[in-house]
Image (tube, rainbow over all chains, first blue to last red; front, side):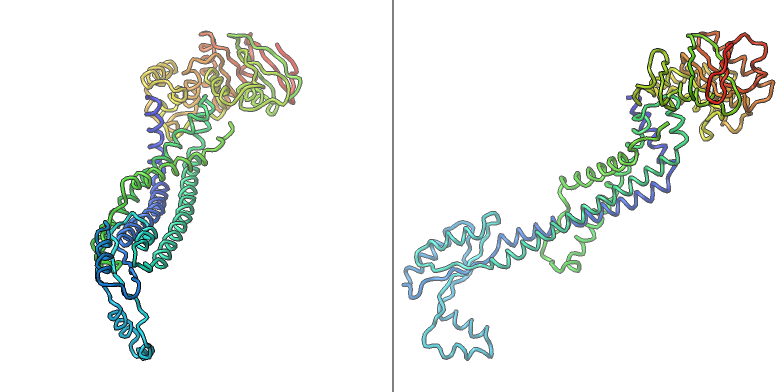
Length: 292
Length: 202
């Protein structure tokens, strides 16, 4: 206990004797960790939004041609009784054709020549079930008699998920680079403080200090640097979040979207990672100590 | 160095002497584990320095006091802190460190200067601080490398008296010096070095 206090006191002494170096590296570390945090914050939010959207995707349920009204009523009943499904409207064959014509605009003549209406009647439904995979809902609904096919914007969702995967991989790579940067900064800072105390270290070893006795204060010093850098980054991230939340309309033009801060787990992880990097950096700096 | 073989008994006082470059400092540094001998055996208190691990060197140094020619004091630390350092590195608790440090400073007449910094002291006083740091841990052996090299004759005599006193208390003392004045008229054993060899003993 007394030893630990001694080491911590030495570490703080090191910091206070090399204030400028520490301040500079503290600033750099917190900026690096902040960038990582901003990335994490955006990722957490965008993933949340996707989850919400995924929960309210719309599907079109196409029906067989010329179904009697009674069977259409049975299908309507089957759809509305399924949990998480909300029928938005029924589109008859005629309505479908009118919609197609208006969608084609000046080219609507293309369909004028048709002798019969090739479009199927359909139900437009919304799925309000974030957890279930849309593909399995599709399969399930296609099992209802009288239903020909169920379509939803699968490609869009897939593409969006692909983009997110890319973003995540990119984030990891960026994060890796930033971590290396932090490691490099800490290592150099600690090397500088070691250098500034070279004479003292030499004398300590000459009067019988073990390598670890000399090293531990520097390890604590690196840890303190990483931890304070991490905390500082977290505070800055929170400020960034407040600004983002209050300006979300301007910021992302998604006024309806909820902006949330990173969960506790990530907060702990940010500070933990930063502290660990600080420790690791100083461990690399102390390496093999001066041979005396 | 070659053909160097001698034995210093527990509680003995020995001079190592010879011209500059004879190997006195090297010999002391080898005895202290600061340098490794390329061959041969060096036994200190039964420990073979040729086969010692780094950690054990640190532990050995806690039992050996070393007085350096250039004092090796830290100018940004007070006299008290300089002397206390030798105990702090052993992980001793602070109250013990304080007590022992004061004791050592008192025995060397430095207690009034404990808050001073090395550069505020005279050469003789700085040398006494270096000695205080060497003896504060009650070493078995005290090694001194040209302890009077930078001092005038009066101070030299004073420092030698200190070494005798330390020796009287049971510590083995080895002093390296090229100062012939120091050796005159003493019955103390002397080992003469020249060009890295022991040329005579008396």
